[in-house]
Amino acid sequence: MEIVEDVVIVGAGIAGLTTSLGLHRLGIRSLVLESSDELRITGFAFTTWSNAWKALDAVGIGESLRHQHYLTPSIFVASTFLDQPASEISYKGHEIRCLQRRLLLETLAKELPSDTIRFSSKVVSIEESGFFKRLHLSDGTILKTKVLIGCDGVNSVVAKWLGFDKPVFTGRSAIRGSANFKGGHGFGLKFRQFLGKGLRSGFLPCNDENVYWFLTWIPSTKDEELEDDPVKLKQFVMSKLEDIPNEMKSVVGKTELDAIASSPLRYRRPWELLWGNISKGNVCVAGDALHPMTPDLGQGGCAALEDGVVLARCIAEALLKPGGEENNGKIVDEEEEYKRIEMGLKNYAQERRWRSIDLVSTAYMVGYLQQNSGMIMNFLRDKLLPRFLPGMLLRKASFDCGTLKY
Image 1 (cartoon, rainbow, N blue to C red):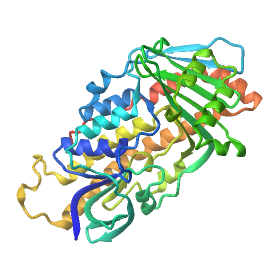
Image 2: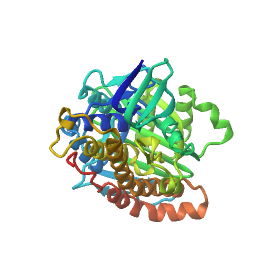
Image 3: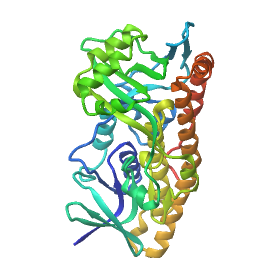
């Protein structure tokens, strides 16, 4: 027996749950398929810039999250290569916070109807079925859907169906962690970042007790064994902090082993985004399934939030009549509805294509400049980049994805 749905979203991450909540706010039910048996909390936290908070406000959860995460007043950037004063740039007039990923996903999920997320549901194949898509799940379930959205990350089944190649390894890796200081950390609220000798590291408080930190580097073959061993990961990070202020060492030292993770940094080639099928018929992708990028702009999660708002708006425009009433109980012409869905997803793809290309390309180049270990590049980077990077970050964060109104 086949189950028929209007909208199926593959992946209960940031993009998937934001899209689902946006549709819910507009009166459209969706089914979210998550391959894990619970919400997957990876990455611990991420920087949310002004563009992300506009998206969170659009789906109605911005205010509740603000109460749990402090405003970041400034960024402090120091070189570990050159003996020169550190630079500090004020974020006055901008909204930047370090958002805990667990709280974001739980907040999104709580706002959805209880039967929205179907856990332990892995998609193994996608087939055409007239004006529908037929999904086969690993447990034998078969679903038919009018709209299929892939928010299933860097190894996306839906992106593969659309013809995208797997994201490419950049040659760099990241170790991330989260430290909890009972009674308060005492570091203040500024974002601290340290550059030099092929490394980029830093830490950013989320609130009085929780601090998120990261280290990115160019791994050698012998570093591959680190990935699955948190003890070795922590030892490795501490060994790389020789020239870093003691505050950073204190944060890493305070981190529990289950709050440390490592991953290779991957990205989608910009020309794939230019020529590839972001949408095809009644299928599209969003979030890391669309635009995996390096973390050097801090925009990966923010862009996923933008995707969710734009996509929900475009789908609603296709599925709802101008008055917002869903077809008034009348029999819908399937071909006509399919064409409206196809056009809505094309509009989404057009709106997100150049934004995605811009973020992926810029993040890659900034990361390359920040971590190149050549002496001349080190000198140019440490002299010039601290002056221009904060302004670039703020310009990328000035984007407004709009509201859910269509």
